Structure formats: C-alpha cells, structure tokens
Length: 164
Image (tube, rainbow, N blue to C red; front, side):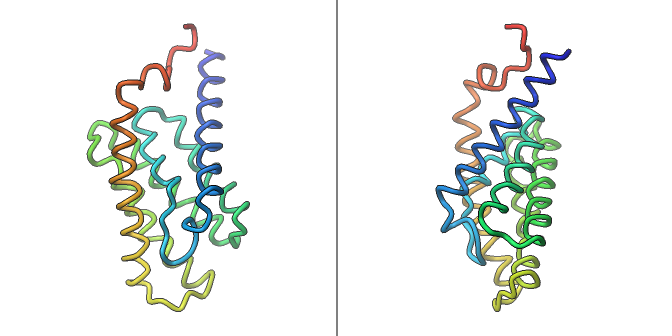
C-alpha cells in the first residue's frame, strides 16, 4: 500500500514539473487575453491516472507564481485547471469528452480574472472567445493527440502496480 502512495506522489510531481516547464518554455503564449497555454494539453492526463489531478493543480500554481501572476490569477486560474482536471477524470470513460471540462472551466473563469484582476480592457465575451479558442486548440486538438499517442504506452508510463 505504501508503494502505491509513493507512486501516486511521484506521478503527480512529474505532471506538475512538466506543466511548469511547458509554461516557462512557452511563457509568451501562456498569459494574457489571448492565451495558448501548451501545458493545458496535459489536462487529458487524468484519463490515465488520478495522480494527474493534484499534479496539474500544483503545476499551475507554481507556473503562475513563476510567471509573475497576481494572487487572484494564482488562485482562480489554478482552480480552473483543478476543476478541468476533475472533470476530465470524471469523463475518463468517454475519451473524446475528456478535453471538454478544462475548456469550459478556463473559458468561464480566466476572462474574469483578466478583466477584474489585471484590468484588461477587452470585453469579457471577447476574452471568453479568445481564451476558449486557445483552450480548444490546446486541449481538444493537441491534448487528444497526446492522449492517443499515450494510449499504447499507458501501462508503462502510468504503472498502477508498483511491485513490478
């Protein structure tokens, strides 16, 4: 039982680290009213393991801290990613729907953070469109491509039996 908890912790930490690295590498596209946060493609990982849920949440918090985000963005932006990850896990039996929760969570939450936290001048519906389109491209297109690329490797990468 202890090894399973360690495995879960290591998997979550790996997801968090990869999320942070992707945000740092693609920093220019990760913040602002027109977002294309490549790291959000990882929100499909709860399809494979529940360890990805805290990993994505912690990764988003750390990435937002490193990216100089304001407290409202660190809190609500990270909660949007957490809600998306929880929804992805809930829909794991329907792989084509797995990207939907992160798309919806970020589309509905992030524009309000941009408007009221950062004082963005764009209208909320415009930012919902731009953030939403970015999320569709990253989560539905790149994320689903990632999901399908990982499917043949799922039992090697997301080992659930640490005794091997």
